Length: 477
Ligand SMILES: *[C@@H]1O[C@H](CO)[C@@H](O)[C@H](O)[C@H]1NC(C)=O
Ligand SMILES: *[C@@H]1O[C@H](CO)[C@@H](O)[C@H](O)[C@H]1NC(C)=O
Ligand SMILES: *[C@@H]1O[C@H](CO)[C@@H](O)[C@H](O)[C@H]1NC(C)=O
Ligand SMILES: *[C@@H]1O[C@H](CO)[C@@H](O)[C@H](O)[C@H]1NC(C)=O
Ligand SMILES: *[C@@H]1O[C@H](CO)[C@@H](O)[C@H](O)[C@H]1NC(C)=O
Ligand SMILES: *[C@@H]1O[C@H](CO)[C@@H](O)[C@H](O)[C@H]1NC(C)=O
Ligand SMILES: *[C@@H]1O[C@H](CO)[C@@H](O)[C@H](O)[C@H]1NC(C)=O
Image 1: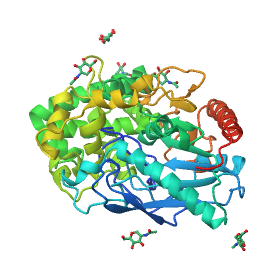
Image 2: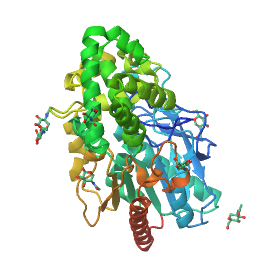
Image 3: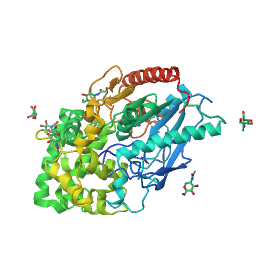
Image 4: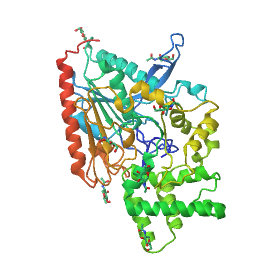
């Protein structure tokens, strides 16, 4: 997807999950129906600018707590980080299962600017200047202190610290790793599931992985479709766009991006069969491949995920009321992750290149807005992140895994979940993710053992690091 963003969908319903995913225009598809264990919101008065000694403005940040499994008074507190989407509650995913196992409380904080935690109504470029991962990490630190104190008040005690542990998937997975890196005294450890800790300007590996995960046959068909569509765009663009129900996308780059995201979404969320089975069937029976793809796009991507086609236009992103601007702003300033066509063997159109993205940043946010990828990696370390007590996990089919940590080390173990539908966040969300499998179950994974094995390794680490936290005698702040 165009940028990491969020969401999880199914043919029947759309579920917005807190820990997003990276696609672009899709994150605002919030949802009525959901799979939350709690949706009761609380509010915290957060500092707007953590880095200014003069600006003391506050904004209201939404959070949730789930205490049913909490072992009073000394159980751990699991801080589940919400990423680049509205955070409507605490998701009923594998962290809930872990909470039961460890007697943990679960708390979750909505990311600044997203959902109901926006400091500003109007999302002008000027107003977005406090939207950054650095501010977001500081939000988490401030919130963590506040929550511990309020828990102590509730339990009628002072100066006690519960052991904390942080979790996140995708961009929130990167935040989870970075939280442990930058605030090691505030958490016993971290789980970074599909955590995209390495900012990359031209992220061509995304498309390469889409091709690899699709398999050689399906990849060849997708490439054929791209070729056919490009030819028809040149000769008969109007009719072609109409066939995809996307007349509004009258700029070729936008149209081709939309088509690329439509294929990627199936693979990113562990449903390659939803894409590859009908396409292979169409090819084998000599059907028109473009029509078959149009059917898939309309039924699965538009109908199922509920993507707003118009959100692929720059006009839409220029609207300062549009929440779709938010993740774009983050990639256009800090991370890039621009999903460009690789120089060869691409499934997506070569029209989707670096200038396409840089033009978008400039046109949507203004002259001078471009991603300072090197600074981001200088600040956090990229794949050389010098953290400790962080578990990194990847899904074998996940196009985002190339932006995650590359090697395992004793203090930062890395595990990969390998199976046909193990993709983005499979270890915490299950696979496939759409339709969402409740409670992080792995029962519909093509290889549930692969998921379970990684979960067991994760549990071992959490157990060890929590026990070390206690013995370190963390008693007061
Ligand atoms: C948060 O800020 C608002 C507005 O300044 C204030 O009315 C409210 O009491 C504050 N809430 C807390 C919990 O401090
Ligand atoms: C809180 O602790 C104090 C001192 O131990 C005690 O006097 C008081 O009754 C306690 N209050 C509650 C609500 O438990
Ligand atoms: C698609 O179908 C054609 C004609 O049947 C066949 O030659 C080709 O190998 C098929 N392509 C793939 C990738 O299966
Ligand atoms: C594509 O390019 C990569 C690196 O530039 C090269 O290793 C690979 O062999 C190329 N693949 C094809 C199919 O040409
Ligand atoms: C970023 O770093 C890369 C690799 O070190 C270097 O090639 C590139 O010129 C740098 N870009 C900028 C804008 O400094
Ligand atoms: C994540 O994926 C990358 C790219 O395939 C791989 O090099 C790395 O080892 C993986 N990380 C883990 C933790 O498996
Ligand atoms: C698992 O897959 C089967 C067959 O596709 C489906 O009927 C069932 O609802 C799925 N179960 C879950 C928990 O998603």
